[in-house]
Length: 128
Image 1 (tube, rainbow, N blue to C red):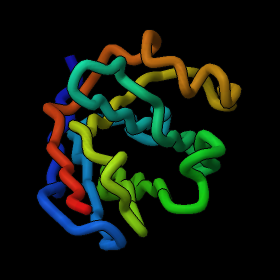
Image 2: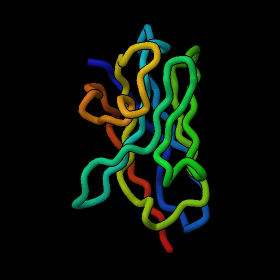
Image 3: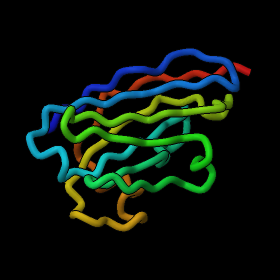
Image 4: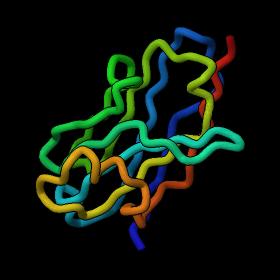
């Protein structure tokens, strides 16, 4: 079982920014796709962003202008920068990691069923 430890999150106002981080001790971290998901109360877990081992990224169209995912393979960390936050962004955010091959498709990276390793989740609350 891979351990992913998240940090960041909190309570902010609409229009503010937040940065979430995800740390792991994975020896072969660069071979893992890292994704971020979020889950609001009463809703299904939703795909937010993903980054391949070599650094290319994928976002749903509704978030690509405000969210940026990045990673540092040497430090074995991944981050999610969220700008211009909106109340509808309020949710528990999770990072996840999986070995999906060197060039997983966008569709593959966004499929939460393929991720077996998850962070503990961190609450992001955006007030109007």
